[in-house]
Length: 85
Image (tube, rainbow, N blue to C red):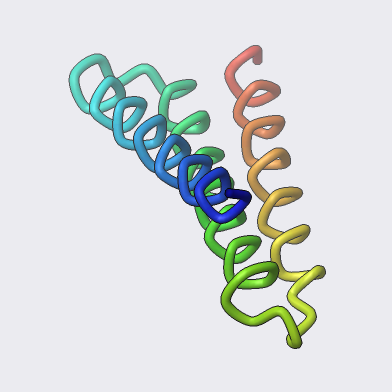
């Protein structure tokens, strides 16, 4: 059951990134670009988390999925700060 939740989270993140990138392409609003980049990192985070907990339970990927999550949040934070100037 938990495997399905991890997969659904990854699919949702990829879908959000795709929709935000499509919106950025049509409107060229830079905040959409930063948000889509954040969701790309969150999708990578979910894939690594799935690999860590389901595919490779004997390998510790804790730092890899946390680094991608923090990077995604920092990218969004950077975009929010950059766009308010």
